[in-house]
Length: 114
Length: 113
Image (cartoon, rainbow over all chains, first blue to last red):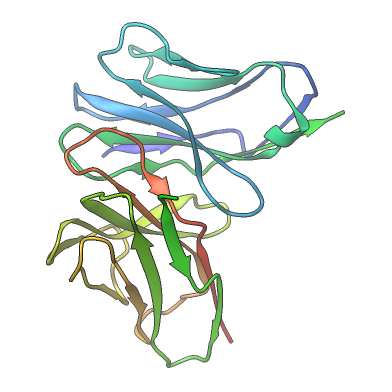
């Protein structure tokens, strides 16, 4: 079965520090996409970063980077130089190849403190 | 501006009533989705549609119905058969056959009294 696991229900980080949010996935497909979304308290889902399974380099988008370890089936999100506005829920998601489905994990609540 | 509009943002209904949540997009996306979000459970797929006049059940379709008569519109009806309808509902879209990201609306919060 295809599944996304986020084992950290909550994380705390001090402002300006880096933080890693864990994500592991389970799929027998060779081709798939991995996504991270941010959900502030207002509820909307904001796309952060994407990694394709055949991409050899880790994806980066500004302060966000994805630590992709294919053999371990992990796709951890690294946020550098945390800001107070980074406090939110973070969801990891997977899209198997040639399907229109996106499968989500249960999320990690990140709180950034001054 | 291009985007996805969900309405209403908040909705209250009595048990036994059907209610329809609206989702409209002007991004020219082919695929549209409805997700349900409960605390601690992440997002679960209710229905999705890849083209007009066609849609598929997701993981938790029981008690819900959809239609896709126009490319830009994908309304969700929560029927009285849905046993626990109180939740946050998110509509999303993306280009079909594309591994790109989903674009989401701001969500609709349904409370059954």
